[in-house]
Length: 276
Image (tube, rainbow, N blue to C red; front, side, top):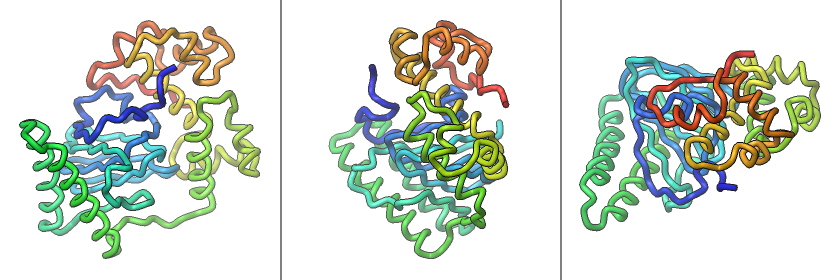
């Protein structure tokens, strides 16, 4: 079986979300890399660590490795996403950080760092890796400065948000297993209905949908990335049989796993899970 998403060493990457398949950022998932979103135009929403928040122009969101998140950006949105190995040497914040950057000078600082990294990646000059590492460290410093100055957007924390956050962590740890929301709720010390109410209040998704999205993202990643047999993917994601896995995929997307192999890499292909 292939390694978990992002486990391979991919180095530093810059990605435009609008040029990726819709499921790759639109479905809840976590990555082995640290992630930094810089939205320069438009609006949207992010579900991050069990909470849903609004996004606007000049919002920066830092996402630590293995943190559950999904992006829902408007059609006119413009921005970049940085992915980097967490052990690249930069001292990033330990927790998610959402910044609404209002000062033009501070906006320009981060934009300049992204543009410098884009140039390095495009030109491939000598010592490119060293230059990228240096820019990555400067990005980490930029984030830590904003955090120290108290510019992070910290919404009030309710009991529902804390429970949703704990469930998000449980999904990250256990989505490849056979357990459903009921079993995870029991380990968190609450009932299944109580967990779902908390998740809906915090992020607008049921507990079942959160788990289904994470499984679906991994299934789509594996189907798009390789020719792993469907039976192997089903087993790796905790399904009792390939037939049950196929029914799950059809229910979520309206297509069979074999059909998703060809459609998985098309930019903009939404195919998000059906709500329940």
